[in-house]
Length: 223
Image (cartoon, rainbow, N blue to C red; front, side, top):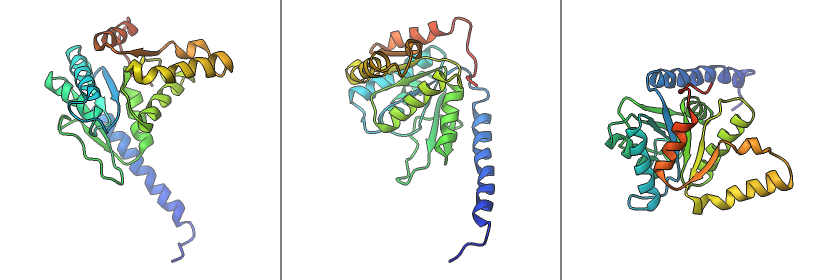
C-alpha cells in the first residue's frame, strides 16, 4: 500500500512528542533523587555467581554511603545491584528498556522509581545526566556500549568528568592494556588525560573511596 506524500515526515513529527514525554517523565522521577551511581553488567549472571554477589555487595555499600543506585532495570548484574541497594534502604532505580524479547524489570526496583524507555538514546542521556560514577561489572556488548559512551562524552567535554570504574581486573585488564598500548602508546589516538578518570578495581570498599575522593567540592548534575 502506497503511503500518502509526506506521511513519513508527519510520523516523525509526532514521534518527537513521544521522545519529549520520555525525557519529562525521567526528569520528574529523578529530580529529587540526589547523588546516584549507575551499575552496569551482564544480564546473564545468576544469583550465586561471583559477579552477582559483587553487584549485590556494591549496591548495598553504595546505599550505605548515601548513593542512589541506578541500573538498566533488568536481570543479572542489574538485579543484583538493585537488590543490594534496596536491602540497605537506599533508593533503587531502574531505567528499563522495551526490547523485542520483552525485558521485564527486576523485582528490586522501588515502585516509584521505575522508568521505562522505548528509545535507547533517551535512556543513555538519563544515565549520564544523573550519575556521579559508572561502575562497570563484567558484561557483553551492552555493557561495553555504556562504558564507551561515558568515556567519549567525558573526553569530548560534553559531560562533567566522573569516575568510570571497571570492576573485575581479571575480566577487564586485557581490554585496558589494549587501550593503553594500542590507542595511547603506539598510535597516539588518545592522550594520557583521557584515562585519568578510568579505574580498574576489585575491592568494593576502594570503589567507594574512589567515588568519594573524586568529589571534594560536592556533587552536581553532569549537564
